[in-house]
Image (tube, rainbow, N blue to C red; front, side, top):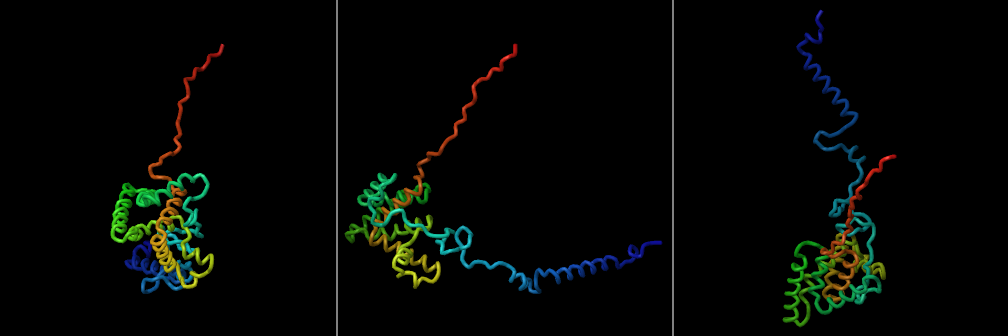
Length: 245
């Protein structure tokens, strides 16, 4: 006697209806999407909250970290703005060189800082030459270096963001609490710190360049310095196996 299920012409439709019924039951127990194609409210409630701000590296912004650097807290500058001679440590001779360049040839110091910070081919010339032109124009027309700070203040912002250093607003808020009340979020704080970087370069340009030079020389090697340890493999000498007596 033939099987009734094999002989029935409605078998494919019956199987399809059974599969659809099972899928509908599973969806009722474990909902995946609603009628409009969006996730249900239960799934949204169970999902962890997504932070509103993100860093440049794709990590959540937390604990007031600088934009682009997911750090827990900001560090202090290695030396103060007015410490022109640096500190009496292993970098003492380099601090004296930085002080001399900042006083006599600030264009060279600015190009050197940008070269260490960016380490890209031609970084020194791309920053030193425009700075030199603005330096000469400002001194020729106005009698002082008033144009170059508009070009060079961005290096201070880049150094502060790269090493997660404390800004001027945060330093004042920490010391006297006068700049922390009107700053509401991280975006406003960063705008305030950028404005402080610009003001620092305008009013204390030489000291700002020297402070940045001391900071990058302690933290970064020069791009041309390639003193990496090299492991030299010395082949063993010729070995002769002795024969037994």
